Image (cartoon, rainbow, N blue to C red):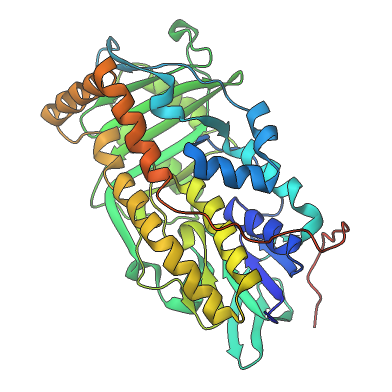
Length: 408
């Protein structure tokens, strides 16, 4: 196809994955990212099954990621008093391959750095589509012309808002929220490549030790909560308020939250859209489908990037490529979203009765009889797509440019 100049908004997982593939296929790729530098940090993410493994291998990053595997062990579910309720095997939470989000993002970014131009500290302000392309105005000033624009800028996508409308039209909230940040787990827990999950009705605190670093994940239920996704101080205050009366080790965890540089907060929500493209603009990753935890969002990000790049490289025009991309990915996304839909109630059951029921389910799934069934269930969703063998060979030089967009 002739549409070779592509802007990708977002430099987390989906965006750099697509940049790697499109660069190899000979496209002229620019990636713009609101953050002022590459974003480190984040909790552990996992991959399962042959589809994830195949895409990571074709990207050339699988062996590197295997060397960064967290080797996470068992996780213990605790009752309100801190006593062990059930012990979860490593595969239950960590899948076949588990790495930290920061290690994953950096590996993909560095693997494709020669294939694209990265621009940090800027964002898309306006999109104006015309017959021959899209005029993009940037927040830091200046405009530039592109053949295509890809929104890979997350659940709160600016690209989606500009091309499709307000986020509220597409976001399906569960009433659950989560926060992650680095912490210092109490030595008394004895965490070493392992974790604990503590619950009271409607709330969960997870502490883990991964590659020598301690991290926390807090989940809570509040259907009435409204928040500003860019007000980090306000988000910390929300978490403090919702866990202020919690016992166990929670007060100490909250104290570390206020100084954690990698604090992240958001809702457990999904994005549901009847189409992912509009004209010359297309969405990828959480901007298009945000499956929520348990829905294998990072797997969907790399698989979706591979499929979108493959269709753009082989279709006669962008409209055909976008249509084929949606046709291939929609059933896959639907299955993963279905799996992730109940993440909140499963992580933090809203009542004492449901919490007991959840723990009974944990015990059953961890039994020898059902453990293989659970592994097949989660892997089945991860493998619910037939991957085409796209001819995405490198036809581009190895030089890369990292800098500012041209100013007009």
